[in-house]
Length: 76
Image (cartoon, rainbow, N blue to C red; front, side, top):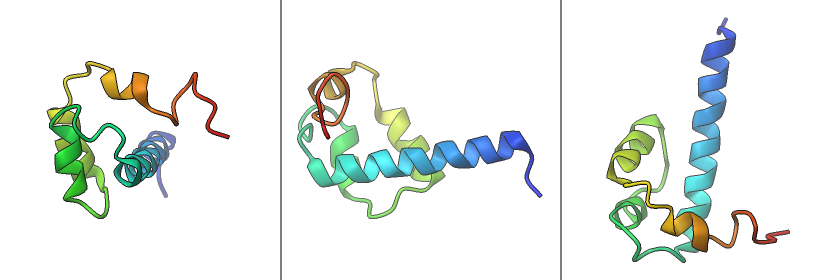
């Protein structure tokens, strides 16, 4: 049986994988930084892939501000 903390980590990993699959399909931000070319080389996103891609990110926020799926854009 998993502890609540372990369940929270697994839920976060699932959410990261879901978001990365959306980004990988959209590719609107493909030329923004090193994350996106590295992301296109993956078909699945496990915890190791998420950590690798997170280390490539410089947290500039350019992709988030341009993302059509992130607030304040209406993606419904």
